[in-house]
Each structure stands twice: as C-alpha cells, then as structure tokens.
Image (cartoon, rainbow, N blue to C red; front, side, top):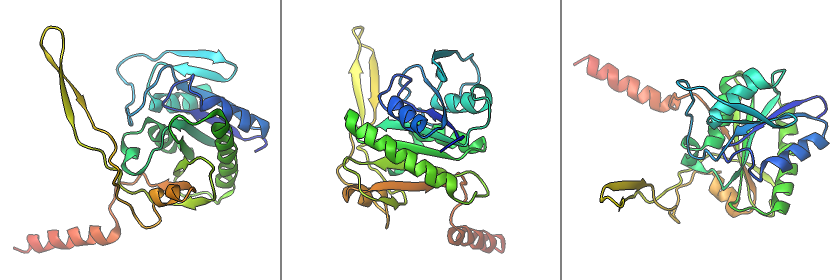
Length: 255
C-alpha cells in the first residue's frame, strides 16, 4: 500500500466508529489517508447532491474533514477539492449495518462510492453487521486493506468499478457475489401532532424472507463469508432483454 492515496468517506458521519479503524489500518500500510465525511448521520439519502446551497467544510484533525452535505458531496469534495492528488481508491464506510441487494439504491454509503466512480476513481463500499464491536471493526478494517490491495493490483477496467462489500462477524473467505432483492414491509404509519395535524413515517421493518440470485450476497453471509459485489453504473438491461424489446418495437412498427 506504499505511496497509495486513500480517501475515506461514509454516511454515518465524521464521528462514526467505523472511520478510525480504517484510518489506522491504511496508515499502518503506508498509505496517504484522507477523510471527508458528513458532519452528522446522512443514511439513506442515496445519490443526493447539494447544488442550491453552500457547503461547510471543517478540518477536525489532520487530513480529516467534516462536510455539511451528503455522502455524495463528501466524495465529490474529497476528490475534486480536498485531497491534493487524485485518490487511488475511495473507501466508503464502514457502514453500521449491511447494505444488501436493493439497499444499494438508497444507501448513502454506496452512493458515495458511486460518485467516486463517476469522478474516475475506483471505489469500495463496506458495511458490517449493525452494532459491530470494536474488535470486529478492527478485524474488518484489516480485511478492507487486503481487499484494497487486491483491487488496486487488478488490471484497470474501462470505467472505474464500484464494489459493495459486506463483512460478517468471524468472517471466512471472500466470495464474488451478485446482489439479490432485500424485502421490506411496505408501510405508512400515521401519527398526529399536538394540534391534531397528521404526520407520516414511511418504510417498515426488514422481512425475514428475501429474494436471492445464484451466487448472491445473502448466501455468502449466511455461510459466514464476505460478500463482494461489483456494481455496474450502466442502466442498460441485459443484451437478451434489450433484443426482446427491440424485436417487439420493430414488430409494432410493421403494423
């Protein structure tokens, strides 16, 4: 990891317990480590970016900055403004709780990694079990360093990739996985304020049932292994489905 520049961000905030172990682990391997993270928890804000109000940036420690914006803002600010050279890798996490399957569409952790990819930097989003112990976070940090070294050693891709990683307690081997579908109970809870006006909470608890794909993240974690899912930022469907729609369109054009 000598002479590599690493940018760390997250969506749990600058004081989240997952940052310090990562900084320590990457520093021990000789990396030039920088941190830009939200000044408060910004979970589940997805790819929101702040364009219509100013951002505040404060240095809370050498090479460590809090930002008043979203995780995407932090990734952008870190790459474009804070870090004096383009990072070799962006690490987003370690998130307090797994990001599995369709969670990636809502997760600020994954969104910060995706923003890095859009800025031309390979990124690794990392999540652990909710309420992970200090010991587990230290172990997970060592695994993240090992994964980072592997990723940086692989041949460059045409476009920088995003990897979504989930690390269970007592982790086993690394499995290359595909995201499944994580089900939540759809729910809108209605409450009333002291003046009798309604307000709402949306989103219910996680369902014990979940969809899966062959080689999926859920299977890996259930076996005590680490899931590593490459994410593609292209919204194009698989070629066979593309062709099916193309054929249907051409048939309609003939009528």
